[in-house]
Amino acid sequence: MLVSAKTRRATRIQNTLFLILFLALVGVLAWLSTRYTFTADWTATGRNTLSTASSELLEQLDDPVNITAFATEDESVRHATRDLLARYQRHKRDITLTFVNPDLQPARVRELGIRVNGELLIEYQGRQEKLTSVSEQSITNALQRLARSGERWLVFLEGHGERRPLGEANHDLGAWGQRLEEKGFKIQSQNLVAIPAIPDNTAVLVLAGPQANLMPGEVALIQQFIEGGGNLLWLADPGDPHGLQPLADTLGVHFVPGVIVDPTTQVLGISDPRLAIVSTYPPHPMTRNFDVITLFPQAVGIKHELPAGWQGQAILVSAERSWSETAELNGQIAFDEGRDSPGPLSLGVLMSRARGDAGEQRIVIIGDGDFLSNAYLGNGGNLTLGMNLINWLAHDDRFIDIPVKITPDRTLSFSPLAQGVIGFGWLILLPLGLAATGAVIWWRRKR
Image 1 (cartoon, rainbow, N blue to C red):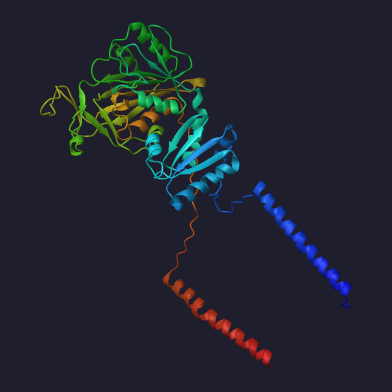
Image 2: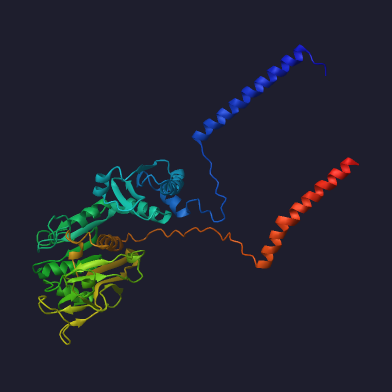
């Protein structure tokens, strides 16, 4: 080919156009990468991809989700949180993640009750929930609870000196009631004398330790509510049932005379003998992944005989060394054979039965209402247990069961002989083979 000034000029123009088009293509691709994303999970178990259950739930959430992660500048914690929530953001664009250093905002941390580095605060439709365990299952279940929580009404009976659900006195349930409202529950107090009817949309009826006798007509309305398939939480106290004995007979409940005394508390430095501790729980959706001790002041033991058609179990049981003390709790306290009831004693039972198309009816009787009061709610796992009680009673325990995606076994185990063969081959045979190959090639080229 004859090289001339014309051909050189054409080649230069061609190279310039190629460079311009190449840079334009790179720019377009960079711009498209900011508008569209493509993610491929090539892992064997798809462990970097949300499960089908999680992605289907995200499609049902119409409003934005705001997530605040309270994490220090430790990048390992932040990276794990960011990586997990990025999977949710790929399915739902209006999920926002904000990191807050708890060391820089101590007042806000105390106000929200943040206790763990990396704890999440999830907000949806004005409701919020905190998560200390960050996983796909915990996040998806929290979103499910927040999305469903607008339909549940809790009706607290009043007019007999009961603990008020939003009261501020030490014996009231205001702190617990506030947390219930934060989860989306609707709280209503009902005086059956003023309005002799229990609302039809009641998710759970709560009897919170009446101090005066209920009238027979009120008890009859409660029993009608139970017969109609209503869910009940009965927070009883030692002593007189205050007119609720017919309800106890209907449910097969017998309250053991006296107050549960637990000597185990003395080992823990607690001087009050009326404080019972529960540290182990039977398998149940209410106590799933729950292994925190709960404290019950002035609890009464419960003996339970299930009525026909009901299923149930004891959910809270006192320690082996405990007993129900019938004498005055003054001075030296000891078990009196023949008068006191030996432990362990049930202080919390639950029961359920199928109601056809209406679903399952659920009832929980706890022999102590103080454990959810403002004075004791912050002890141990009392608050968590109280929330689990309501979640189960309101049928909000249908959490999505997401199987944990594990990495396949990538560890190779070799016998000493195999290790020796591999080591000899890589360290000696392979270098010698390469050297011999090079020598042969050099010799043949020289010839």
